[in-house]
Image (cartoon, rainbow over all chains, first blue to last red; front, side):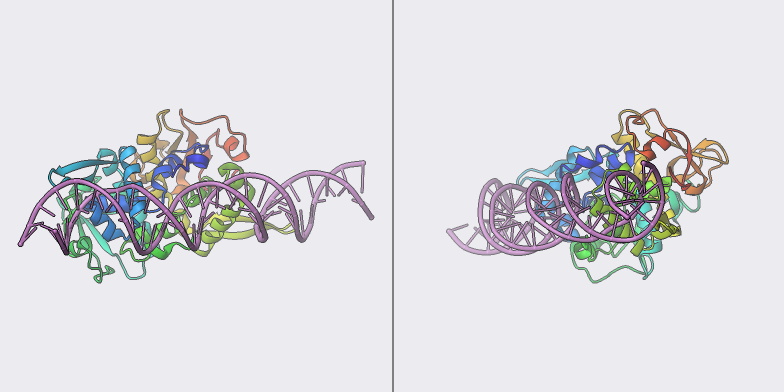
Length: 172
Length: 172
DNA sequence: CGGGTTGGTTCAGTGAATGAACTAGGATGG
DNA sequence: CCATCCTAGTTCATTCACTGAACCAACCCG
């Protein structure tokens, strides 16, 4: 992008976050990575994003230290993209935006339900467990399809998410 | 924008939020509105945003029910933009993104500090008070300049934010 | 050798962002 | 009553990024 041009005059940490995360598609890539998507082709099929944009965004996320690109097999050489600690900490803002969308933008009811595996209880506001009240990191969350979920998509990631799935575990 | 085009295939509340909020500048406008900015000219000077973009974004936010446009004086007719309830509920995601930026993108230390006025205690993760532990809505938050704050900007909003200020109270 | 899979790059066309100039209604000052 | 200023916009030419389709390269399999 290179569009810090005008954001960079901003005296605000939100603006600094948005220089990276405010790009079109970037937060959706992070969301998929939190779900457990790791391979270029899976991001491509699940997000339905132009290849050039996906390449540029993944590079930007790696450069920013949010994701790490690593070779998971030689011969044939295959790369995967996984969230770093910095990237996993995006779980609270991603959840907060999704919850806002759920309350105000989704007529059909929740599309995904997040549960704290230790308590088997839903996650509430602020990424806290509704039973134990503790802050729940992404690793301890299980994703379930909600009543508003769309079951028509046939890409591997969508199919895998029709059942419950532990966040950050490789998908599909 | 009009770019729901590709997001709309997404089976995710985050994507629905981002159709509106993921546009360049939009979340910064919401942040300023949470701070208490209400007038076109103040948004313009504080954000340093092109006029056409500001007009388009404010209209989109009003159409989405996040802000309300209202005449605060006749003769000369003057309009102001204030957050609706739906808009005020963007405080948790905005704070979550800002806190992430503060931890990972700001070398100079916090630029703004948020305090729960009832407890006179800092706000922690998930928009909860670090003392009483309750979720703190934006109305009960006071903004203070932090050690990393930039004191060189001279627009009215930046000047007003050099001192403490109750969120959502008209600014400047 | 031919076809398939993965992970990209390149390129022309389109659409949005940018910055400067312009407009309009009313107030203000002499 | 005329000139100037203020607020809140709109218009417009240029630049830039996004889009979609095509292409490329390394490697495997039969």
